[in-house]
Image (cartoon, rainbow, N blue to C red; front, top):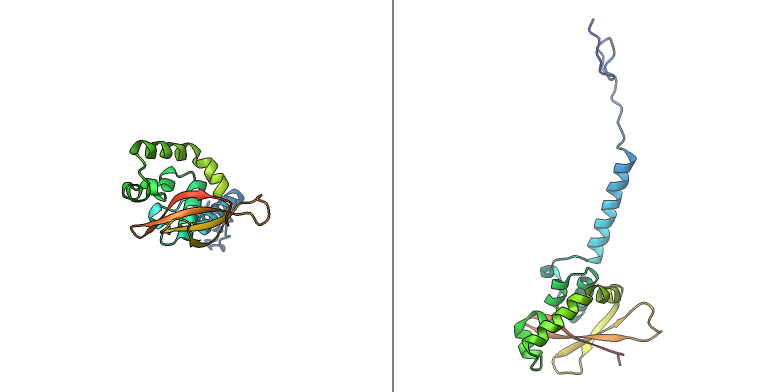
Length: 172
């Protein structure tokens, strides 16, 4: 008679039904945490590549701007601004020099986390005609603002994309 060391096999050679082993609790917890993080990231749209951001409307551009800033994505923020395009800056920059553009880019890079902290939880409205010809303004409201107060972001359309050019407030 052959004796097996396999706990699932008896001395008679018959195989006992295999007991399903549960994964360790820490593995289940880690899997649930990763699934939750992935779901939140997907639903909020954070860290989306710039190519996937919706710049086809001023409202989409406002959300993309806020999302890129909240993610601390300097290149993403610049890609959504008129500063990120030499052609847009030349057409809509009012004679701004390359040195002024570089200085503005440095300010954005230095302050992107603060910008993101401010706009990460912003509520946006539908756009309206801007005060400057060819612009659209998207009102926003931040947590903690007095009731009824709103400021706005200004966008201009350039090569079929709406790009950020200014912030204003309070909204009319």
